[in-house]
Amino acid sequence: MATTLAKAGATLILSGRDEEELKKLAASLPGSGHEAQDADFAAIGAANELANRAGHVDILVNNAALPATGRLADFSEEELSRAIQVNLEAPIQLTKALLPAMMDRGEGKIVLIGSLAGKVSSPYSSMYNATKFGIRGFAFGLRADLEGTGVGITVVAPGFVAEAGMFADSGADTPPGMGTTTPAKVADAVVEAIKGNKGEIAVAPLVQRAGAHLGLVSPSLSHRLQSGKAGQKAAGDLAKGQKDKR
Image (tube, rainbow, N blue to C red; front, side):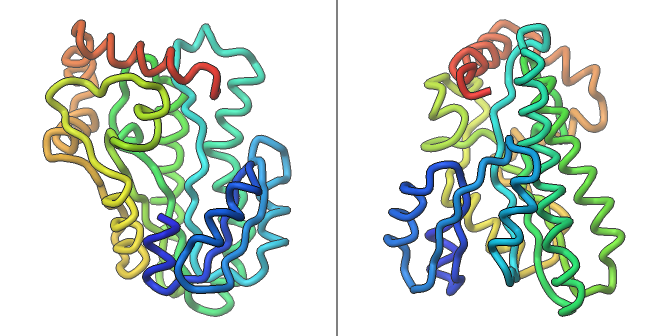
């Protein structure tokens, strides 16, 4: 995303927990003026503090998230709170902090990186589903409030991503026959979101998008289809490979 946006002419403020890695990334990007600002959204108030340091922001891309996969009973109280804080509350707080200045200027764009998991639930993902369903509902409600202000909001919803992200980090295989998308396609969707005004952009093969739509229309049927051995194994392997990142 950072490389694609820099190539498109954006000057970036990169945020994350590892400031040294962010500085290396900023230095490698085309263009000039890119900054690195460390922020750990698991800490209360971190989103607002980052917004204050950032200053003038024309475009916000909310991308931080924790995997938050696994059986609910296996989560500690701290892990539950951290999942909600990082995946749901921090993006809302950051949006709230930056929105007034955008509205005063009559222009701006908010992009929330959601997931098809915000449309359809899956095994071992009750907490991840909860946060991604929440992001989607927040974005659509705020979108209605922003009508006529000149500020837009779009959810970019990837499906299973190869090369980077949850499956790549965990070492788990994606469910067979479902296909994958790439980080480059997700980045292109972010640019599309910034340039246009769609409410949501799904970044996934047709079979995944169809499955997500089925989950919206008939959750019970979707659950039955995912309860097979292959689906349960893929979800379980993913959760096991990500447990240390909760």
